[in-house]
Length: 443
Image 1 (cartoon, helix red, strand yellow):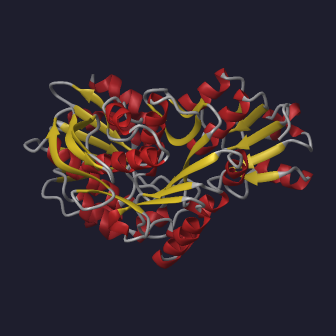
Image 2 (cartoon, one colour):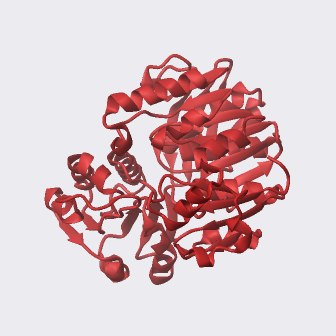
Image 3 (cartoon, rainbow, N blue to C red):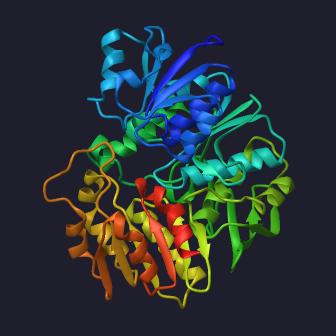
């Protein structure tokens, strides 16, 4: 990759695409791209010098990016019918998937890849925080915006690359990790894999690509350096005590036990992610006492159990959960935090195929809430599937109280008028774009 090369991203506002675009523009490449919607992410890219057009129209693409030697990067979320993508294909431009470019960019780093159907973003973010606080040389590509940096890419040197290894479309097989961690392996992305056995096969292939150390959640039963909560493992938490600001616990490592360590985020699932992040950092040789201190100052990630309103009338938490198991993890965290408060969930299902494949599981997970507010399914890359819509999920939810189906236009008033004090907003679609309006309304 020569300095001064020109890149054009199709779907540049995506969380994975935007970090690569920011990395390239920071390293003096010329970068442009297309996205359908202007967001905080695209606005920040534009401030960095990235040229972005918001119309799927060749006329809106600056002439600089129409040349045949421009390298085109696209996300699998983009339709194959996209006019811009097909223009570049017909013209013969070099075209790569996002994962291919990420693998290429990180090949000269010592790559630390964090994979798993759940928890990989938070784990990667905590690793990034620990490396930053202890003065390591690294660049991190994270699938979420760290509150500490207001960014999903942190460039702090060139020894290590901290990478979120995405299993969708088998993207993580483009990486060449020296150290790899797997948080979880669940049935998901069945639109790509077809069945759970194929998901597991893909993770097996990922494991074989790791050249040095493999770290795994103890529950997976995979050979490697293990981590856990309250189970015997190489790294574990014990004597866990919950407080309103986080968790105090004893942290057990292969060589020591550290008493009364504090982790500043809510949810036992997040504490487990913290233990995994600590384990990686310990295994690369970082001083463990410094790591214990750094755990206490992690400021979280946007849309990962993020408290956005905390008033007398409303406590509103925003989370990216879009799988039944993730909803259950959020529910368990809410029970710990607010055992006596009634709870309302606002959920936007993500993908017709995922809603179809886990319809009953979604209904069971959502039935735990006192009130369920459902939005229409966010289609992303998919076309509608006959008989799969939010109203079907609505009928399956066995809530003792209220289950409502609303549009985004009515969402603000419905949330404001819901009597439950604790409200949680869940989903991986464009519901995240409503957060600022909800904050303004409820504050």
